[in-house]
Image 1: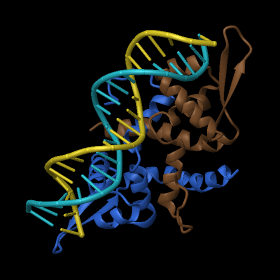
Image 2 (image 1 turned 120 degrees about the horizontal axis):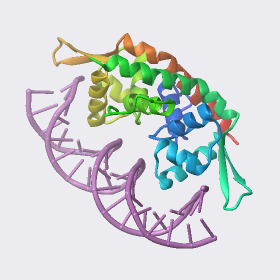
Image 3 (image 1 turned 30 degrees about the vertical axis):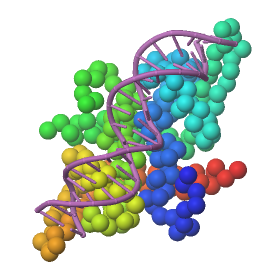
Image 4 (image 1 turned 45 degrees about the vertical axis):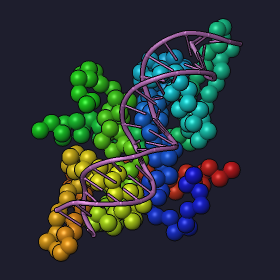
Length: 112
Length: 112
DNA sequence: CTGTATCCGAACCGATACTG
DNA sequence: CAGTATCGGTTCGGATACAG
């Protein structure tokens, strides 16, 4: 997907691309949680953002594929994992912060 | 929705709120088109971003409800419309610009 | 031209049970 | 604890025809 586009790509196509990577109901929420509160285990994330394991698993896999997070298996018993944002994901920090403040602000705006 | 949330809202909930307003496959693409290239008619938007009329209509209605765009009916024959971003939507311009540049940049990043 | 109505397949996603 | 398998419901969205 998003391949075979004309070279004369323009702005809204770039937005399309971005949405393809971090769009959907959960990816930015997950990244936001990791960015603002640091690395988390699978279970911590699951509770924190109230998402079912099936979906969380899928989303984390996709984020990892896009090099936005890393998965580390801890040598515990039973096994535990640790998900962290990559340095590359730092490039999204500004985007995430804007989303957060816009969310707060919009809730006020809509009160009418 | 997104009402009845606890007052101790936190970052990922704010992101959730933002995504509720401008999330989905099309809203930011539409806003991006309007922000970067100015007001457009229904048909222009439809061609520009390659979206079916049914979806476009629905998305525009929702954006209007959230006070992000305005719809103006022109006194032509046959009738035409003009969709524009509101001043309020300017608060999203920064977000949109980041999305655009991130989209371009990510395409490079992923080339491996 | 600007939408709406209908149809219908695809994607999404939540719950739950279960394996290692 | 971490994650997968299965199931089923809901939403999404594309195509098309059509009405004002």
